[in-house]
Image 1 (cartoon, rainbow, N blue to C red):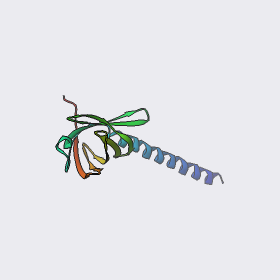
Image 2: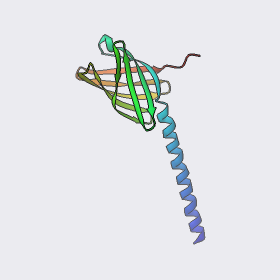
Image 3: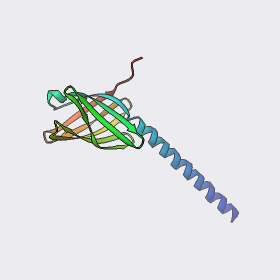
Image 4: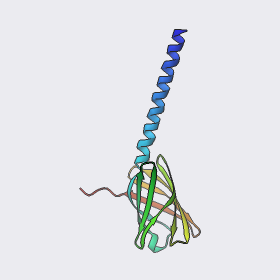
Length: 130
């Protein structure tokens, strides 16, 4: 009986360590999405072809803003799941645009969707100047 309890407790400790490692990997991975991203969009009006995406974290929530030549837009409905980010933004106060993006190292790729159609998005992380 004692051997059985020992084996069971050893399995539980291994499962706890494994769960903790997975959780730590997810935390580290979701942090890689943070930063400043220069991006381009296909099939977009010229004013929205290029922009800068700002992704930051405040305690438990994420904030996203997009800077276009005409101004900065604050994004809503931000959802981050490890290396994926989804959010919405209202352009010119009228048109709702949804973004679905994925981070691969220092690249961000994905699509945006609006009433005007979809656009491919490609971006690179803006690294600090040394």
